[in-house]
Length: 174
Image 1 (cartoon, rainbow, N blue to C red):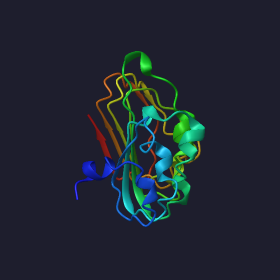
Image 2: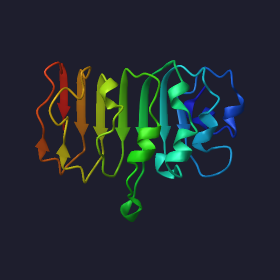
Image 3: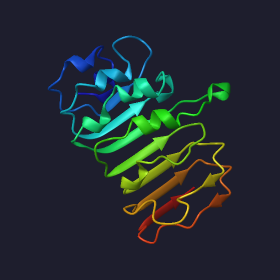
């Protein structure tokens, strides 16, 4: 079944035995808020959350209870900021911490700060952040002890990159 079609089902959170949900498009309408994910603890493998700019704040993000989703190994987080709508969503991102991760791909059109759950990442993709100027992998120590792949794309203002972790096997920048 088409991922887009499934994401159009209102109140999908009532399908508590659902195992495959690759795409969830957040909306402000009842039945499409991020809290619909709360009881979907059986979803597996890959999950992409889009339109996270519509999440009302950290408390609403926490209602998704991603930390209870033990079978998600890849998570793609996507914001759609436009012009003056940009805001700091560090607290929202912090509350979207999954149980475990093999890779994660935050995508946005805004600013990004260091998030405490990133040390679990093996793969990090940063895409379409036109105002992103500095990539700070860490302030000393080993903030990404498992990071193997880093991809940075469509970040035209990126001018500074901190030292890369020694275990990194793949680097893409364009």
